[in-house]
Image 1 (cartoon, helix red, strand yellow):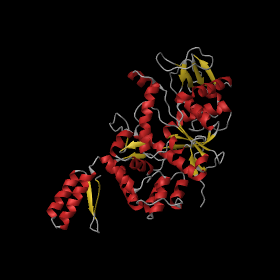
Image 2 (cartoon, one colour):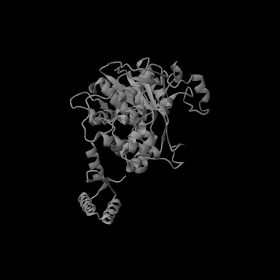
Image 3 (cartoon, one colour):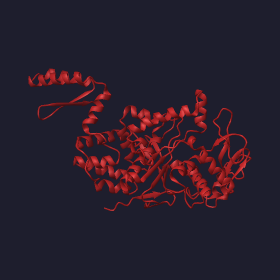
Image 4 (tube, one colour):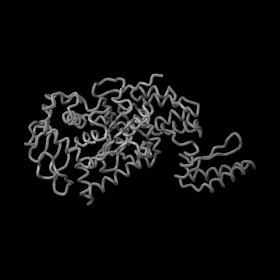
Length: 460
């Protein structure tokens, strides 16, 4: 089977075979969360999609030959304001928010650094934080000023957009059109209305660091510079894949490209750019004003993380996704069927070609999931599902975890099951029905098997 991965590249607007710069050092960067508040379900989509890409690349190139960097934005206006409201440092705020986010990601079956990094080896998965890379940001800003691609004005450092002849190549926005659509009122210190901030002075009470460019006052980085710095530090001046949400193409990713290319003199920042589509809720844009703003934690209170992951991956990553109750219910039924089929079987040695082939075609998850659903061999089904981040547990382990989470008194349930079996043997159907009702009231569903035994599960 041809194991060539094909990806749709936002930079070229074409789908093409993916060829890494270094076959034994595949490098991918994904824009992660801004950790000032609880993550919403839209934040989970790119995390899940690019977790799948990471898994697939590791399968194709070997676990030791793929490096994944997923950044954390831990300094910006919202973070500063929220920390000030609570009277704590931005580190205290972001540490707590990030820890909660990590808990949610583990429930979604997302690989974490501790899952893949091996002691003594180069880290395969890094989660860099912006505030730990101020020195790299300052270095890039200094180089841009020295090369004439940035300038100092009113204690700010700004990128000089017209100095880059092909600015807009990623978003396909010509300079003249962007200038025509720019705001009429722009800061007086800007040379061009398109110029963007690399560094700015900190306001009283805000976090601050020594500024580049000979600026006397302390300041803090602009938004875009952090990803240029972190990708450079962990992946190099040029790397294979840059990923993120479609809303980041402009201005964030466009400005990343400008900073990195002009700083390092490279023709590209990343060879391939992947962007996932928007998420809406029950056919409407998610917003607090519409009352349909849903946090990831709220969803995970009602649904297992594996169900949420499956509901996300049923739609191709580049397409808009409509988050619905029906979609979650369908995902739950699919998983129930998979667990029933796979049982406690060990995985097969090879991923089934029927599952792998659609994933190689620009992560066609809908087709891959349909193929998994057709599998009836337990070991093969488990292997195909494992590649996509599903069925990490056996059916017995899943059932035990469900029971433990329910808080049920297992001994009491088993005693009622035995009492009901005795009633059935005595043909006391009234007592049998009464006990079934009592169990249902406890949240227990019973099933009478053909061999005369009775099994039970936590009702869903």
